[in-house]
Image (cartoon, rainbow, N blue to C red; front, side, top):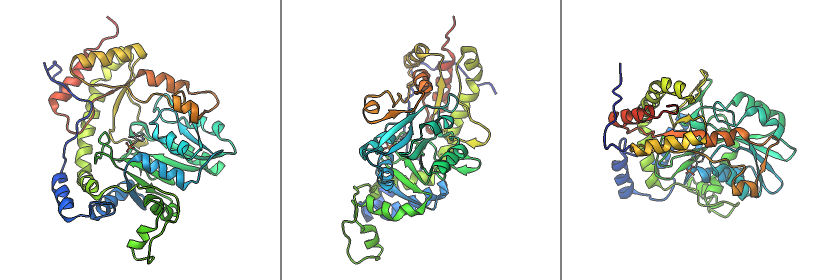
Amino acid sequence: MQRRTTLAAGLTVPFNRTRPVGRETQYLVAATNDGPLSGDGPFTRRATRMLVDLVGAPAALLTTSCTHALDMTAILLDVGPGDEVIVPSFTFCSVATAYALRGATPVFVDCRPDTLNVDERLIERAVTDRTRAIVVMHYAGVSCEMREIAAIAARHGLVVVEDNAHGLGGTFGGRPLGSFGALATQSFHETKNVQCGEGGALVFNDERYLERAEIIREKGTNRSQFFRGMVDKYRWMDIGSSYLLSDLLAAFLTAQLERFDESQRDRMYVWRTYHDELADWAVQQGVTQPTVADDRTHPAHLYHLLMPDLRSRQAIIAHLAERGVQATFHYQPLHSSPAGRRFGRTAPGGCPVTENVADRLVRLPMFAAMTPNELDHVVASVQSFKLHG
Ligand SMILES: *Cc1c(COP(=O)(O)O)cnc(C)c1O
């Protein structure tokens, strides 16, 4: 079937647009009328059950954000001054700041040129006798090389933490992303596949962390045990903060998780259309499309192109903006950022691939509610960008 590739005049396509996908409004009304509005109510229980089923993990706790879930991993791992945690340079800063907050040193490792995930071949030479953990992030929801990373962690007695903000619904070797790390984190920010505005989760594949995590999440108290009738009063037990998601937001999240398959189908359609319709154009222009190996599936979290260089990346963003299409760059390297230099250390060899791809990457609009006209318009606008002549 030949897709219509004429430019629709006057159409603007945002980078992201949210929409209710199911019973969001109904559940918000129910939560408002019935309460509780605070955390750990009935909607939290429903959303948590769906999340653990999706990730295939034994337990999860909803949190106020993925950033806070990462902060919790740093407290749970008891890292502090002198300790090192291996993190990708090509990722969001929450990973690095979580460990820097505890006084530990993030050690930045370069990414692979194909998946843009942390390059597992570079991890081992970043390990020292002070290394405590390896944090991985599945860029665009395409899995990292988890077999090699698990083997390195086992050889050196390190904990693997999986920042699965992009990967909900993806798999590696048939196994859900989010089920590999002893601890994994999720984001339900409005830019993610499943949303509640601001929200996240800490996922436990090693349940030994669960009891202490409940205390850390409840301001350092054993209030969760008190509500279950396990202790007769609750007390200050540990450090912690207020990391619980309001049940109002959990109500919204429950509605989103109930419709996960439908939203994913819509996102995947957008992803596939970009991938197929831009294939010839990409070859002609020397543009690289995403790489997804056969042993993994991704949840269509984002669609990115690697342009030949910074100039062509800036040029295509401007070209698309003129046509009402909002395309954007992505992560700037953490290792060379002001805070990265101050709080972190760069692994031997530096991060030349990260520096290179950060300059060349452009992301196209990607959201489940994209209309066929909008999708056509983005495809045609990209195809009309020509580097040579
Ligand atoms: C979005 C994102 C985060 C932060 O999520 P919040 O829920 O906004 O705190 C962390 N890591 C990655 C890779 C992300 O994409």
